[in-house]
Length: 380
Image (cartoon, rainbow, N blue to C red; front, side, top):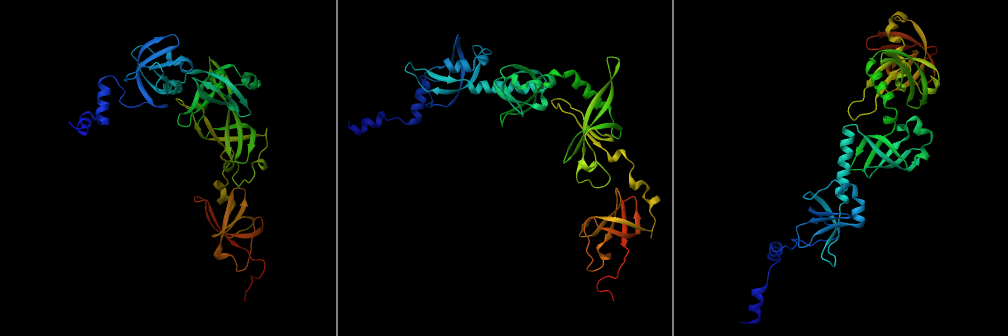
């Protein structure tokens, strides 16, 4: 028999070799560092977990890999199936060294999601502090408690909390971005927050309150109102803070909220909208309006104005349609562009004399005409 014929008899394809290895306990594919495998727990001892990973060797979780997943390993028993990743494909003793970090993370994120859904308190180990809040971890996953979510006592010495364990609730989770936001005050001020929720539930849209301006921003101001609720058979005054958007501060246009109100000032506000926290949503919202608590100037516009009367107003804005003239706070009229003499220029803030030509209170519109005090340009 020729040499070539002999080699052709013993030549085996890769697929045939895989089949043979599989039958006799060999791996169906080569392992490399980072490869993910699934294994069944077959033995457990102090500092070591042995897994059947379906190959010729067994997988072992030990030393540093055991230590980092120790809390998770305590939940395992013989027969459990877990996901692992390869650290060392094969040692001199024929073992595969594994890590349960991925399984640990899956377990941790599962606990986090469950805690958020059930509004359960969790332990948060503080690792760092900044003006923005506290950084730390819960269930081995990094998290963040914003300064706004710290209770009064915790806020007094936030840097001193580093290394300590706080009770908190999870208010926002994004596993894809590996982000978890928690609230400490939801635990430390739990009863007070429950009363605020009750107060928010009891107020109604359109209800008017007297409140104090607590802060002012470019987008509006915050006003604190007081709501009476029943607690343990007693009436309790509960403070609630709501936002008055700049568009709701007055009936006329407001450029700078600070020009209209000041911190500490008492103002009347009407409830525009509210959002009561439900389920995992922990933060309620309250939208207020200063202008809605005042009389709508358009309600009596037909009593104050009649056709053909003259009125001095101020140019409030200029558009492609013509010139808008403010007759009083909250009341504007339009001088249509077709009624503006050629060559006549106006700027915002100009004082103009106009005549009332048409009033539509329902549509909140007034048509104006200019009262000419001088001969128009190119007039013949």
